[in-house]
Image 1 (cartoon, one colour):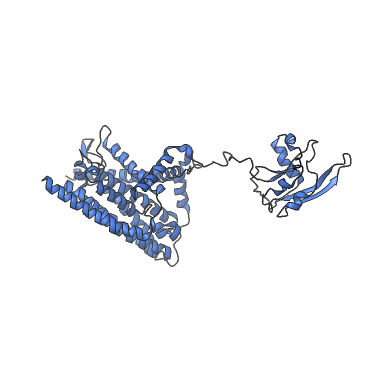
Image 2 (cartoon, each protein chain N blue to C red; image 1 turned 45 degrees about the vertical axis):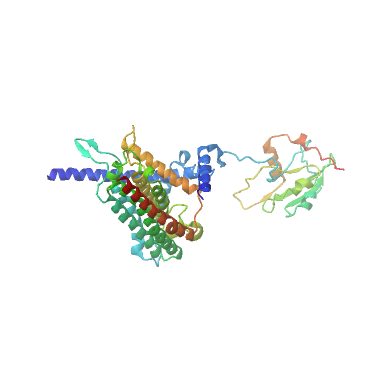
Length: 331
Length: 153
């Protein structure tokens, strides 16, 4: 029994290590892809000097950030100031624990699920964990002792709280159709028909609120550089800043993975192996993020709140109502 | 409300799919395209006889709005032709307006495409030889084109 336990532990550790390193690699490559894609959309070239077509730019940036002076403002709350980047990046990374990125694989005689852990309330887990990320941002804004940081932190907490609501409600329809909160079941239920066809309104609401949730353009008010210098990470430098930066990208990858899992059929797809399908869908979602960012201008703050509370929230409630209605009729 | 958003998305994706729309010039590697009537640093031209085209009339110095040109002329003993003994142009003060080129009766000073004026010394004055060198470096015989302007009626 203990031998099996050790093997399970090893398998889990290896899976965690692989997922973690793949996410890190994706973050690094995302920085390059984002700059390049956005540049080409805006009729520019983007980074070109470091390596062929600027390929080594993220590495150069990383090394630069690593060697920069780590400044803590003298009147900042030191404990929270150090804690908040960590609190921002950890929830972004651990959300991946419940996202299935492939079917069962038989390796060395063991059945391995390509998911770190399949918990039956994966849906709740994701929302519980991703809400924690807000604390990191609010704490960063408050502890910096800077009015721009504080305003950025307050804005982002208000924005994330209001959009998390619609984000959760938009996924309720999917959960109703599947009848399970486990992400594995949700993926398996989409074998024939992806949820995006059954839940188009839900997908639209999810997309809008996911963009707002990860503070990306056009909802990037917390870090509106034209108004707030940089928002909650104004006072951060060196690797602490890099952590916020990485957290933003990790969050982006997480919500994209969730979109793939809930609406785009997860790892299901013909011909290619499941993991490849998952990655292709993920890449498409991430491209969409960059596409949106390079096209739309930022919303005004009141527009953002109106959009969230007066449009998306009623729409998501309506979506739930309609979904339930149709389900009852079908029975 | 949705249609303009989609239009915007289509525009950006079109630009993305066609990389030839990029307007960026990789400057130190490739030279920017400079319009023929670009006004760079004024350059003194070389005349048919191999001397300066300039006849040191001082009109350029007169017309210069920022007073950056200083001319001192003498007469050549053999040919009885006037030429500038000293011709100095303060590139710090020059505003590249091109009035000197317009005023010059013999087209001796022309603003061409020299725009890289950064130096390692804190010195912006170009003397006659430097201004002539700019033309010499081009290694093109401008003399044929440099016939004196015909007076307009």
